[in-house]
Length: 341
Image 1: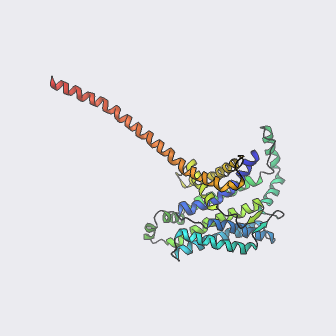
Image 2: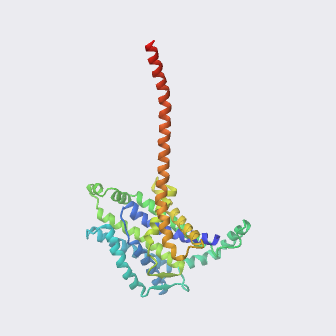
Image 3: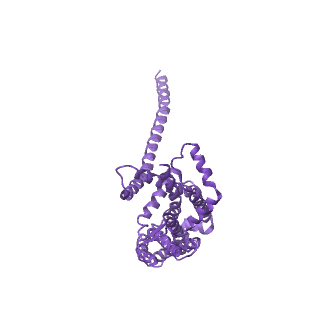
């Protein structure tokens, strides 16, 4: 169980980068961008192809980010210059990217088992530091020594990378350009009346969003040691699930809290899926069904809780009003009796 949860933490923190990209497009820009299913694979395909051809894995990951940015910008151009519906623009780009990704990869699957990747490089540096043995000894001391992770390097390095992107996103959304992007998502006509180029803001926002998604795809490909042309199917649902779960559990009072909630939502989602798949009657093929159920629950549960709170508030107000009415009514009765005398 500990190994399963540990693996969920590792993958969840990587998928959190993708969830941040989905948050940027869906929540900040208010743009239903289905490009995510394609750009996730684009990041994985570009990184995998460059790695197997001898490129530095960190350079390959950087180029994957650029490829995702271009894909997002193209979606923005289709929407803004082509005047095509936002949802349809994302669908068209997602379909186009399927063929583009096949072109990049040359085949449907690329294994990276015997390749030096960014994550294997991190593992090698981490093992030289000898931190794994110290952490594993602590786990043995608390009674978790039966099932220890091979290395802690990936988890800690991905936490650093994800938090860096989180704080970078927070900073971006507080700059003049970031505020303009947020305003475009809230009220496009208002920000346009202030002479802002909303088309450019949408293109840049979608580019940044899909750059994050592509980075996540590149890291997941290196984490799983393969890139597959179908690995992005349903990725937008996973991203939305992470955003919805995070917002429901951790709140959305500020931008910094919301982005942290999205990361937490991605981790919680992976842990819930991991635990659900350990149930005997559920199989790996039920993953999409589990995802759908989790999203439905995340959407319905907050509304149910809010409705109960609202009922309690109404009952409290009603009780307070009745308490105030009783003495007033008694006072009026006494006044009437006195008048009659």
